[in-house]
Length: 325
Length: 257
Image 1 (cartoon, helix red, strand yellow):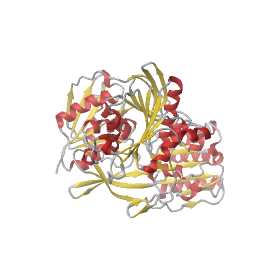
Image 2 (image 1 turned 90 degrees about the vertical axis):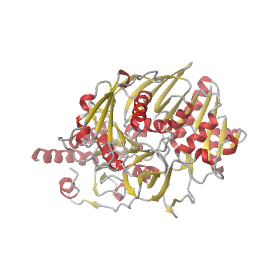
Image 3 (image 1 turned 180 degrees about the horizontal axis):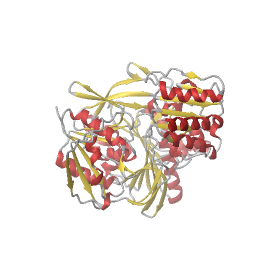
Image 4 (image 1 turned 30 degrees about the vertical axis):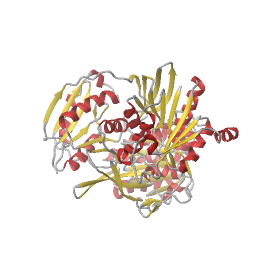
């Protein structure tokens, strides 16, 4: 049965995040021919709406308010609940991002509804949908269904492909006024610590370092390799515990779970906790001095050697390739 | 201060996962306090040490969770509450757990509640924010620093590697992110003392709840393991040639660059 689906779009560095286009595709699937309505929130964001249509949104609702300049769960909740009241959707899709993780359980509770988080695949099963999601940080998977009420899910970046971009697509753009007030939490300051704007969980390429990187400076060649590949830098717990990098880079059972197209593990032994965070990457390259390192067991391609020799050579080769392309 | 911590018992991170009869097999598995909840316990104890008060640790589970509660008591928590659902519920989801915890907390005087930002087994990170919402108090997730001054709370929140400095007022629920603190080990005297600390065991009945009030909104229909990854190709020859070969393989075979 067709149902209306609301998709929350997210903005980063002045453009719509890729995961929001993936969320539109997920919305299309569960809408079963119903309307997909993208919601765009911020202080001045209406000019960003076009790509949402290009990727398949049927309508875009824009709510602009100074209290929506930064994400707060209360500000976004007020806007979202107003839209939900008016639109009466049968489905809601968020990205499973910092914002989506923070906001979705609160909205689900307000709606007295279930919520399936971190979905990597959607399949129809009769009238129903089955949502696949990782458990034990990807050591296993489960398929869940929502027994009643709104189909509310968050989707993991990089897993559900967006629809083909079609720049001829347009749709109805509606501006809505909602009073956003009485925020109980106030953001005083936002400190940017990440560089280049490629988010680890959304990156198509991740270059990751372990204890073998030996120091904070040791991450430099990895950063250069990530830069030529347009990727992000990650780390094992060992590297974080040793103080070589920030915990926000940690990949593993504690830390982030990533599923990029290409994962390059440099000087990482491959503890089971780390493998949980990355072994579902599409292609894995391991670079390690120790031929017995566990990481080679999950790697598609391995080079036994010193990362400080191999990584700069790899950066140079890829630069050459890109120059010739 | 009245300080509460939400805690979950989980598989040790070292454990391999196997599936038997469609369920996760827990034979012979070591259990721990969910690592993010351990940060929550530690932070709660630090707040008590700085501001005075009492730390109560709550879990929803079975008798077996007593061990993790005792560990939290040995670290320095004062009281523990085990809401035992083993006899009443066949299955539950995040909705179920949050509802039960909120029902327990709703009449309590609360200054601050700590939870882990996610459990490493289910991995959905829903219960903390759901409880805050049910209690009608603000919730700040993934914090890496906390300061309390009177009724004012100032936190640093990790947002995908960037930081937000957020201010709020008590009461509040916060969820712990890695980097918040370094959890202490329970000392031997701590372990001895923990045996005598109060551990209250409740069932749904004691909270005036029945099964239907907390019936799950979602259900798991299948559990499976990801396909085993086959060991790949270890490249051979001169290092420079290996690197060239790797780039060519990534380009032409794997098609990822």
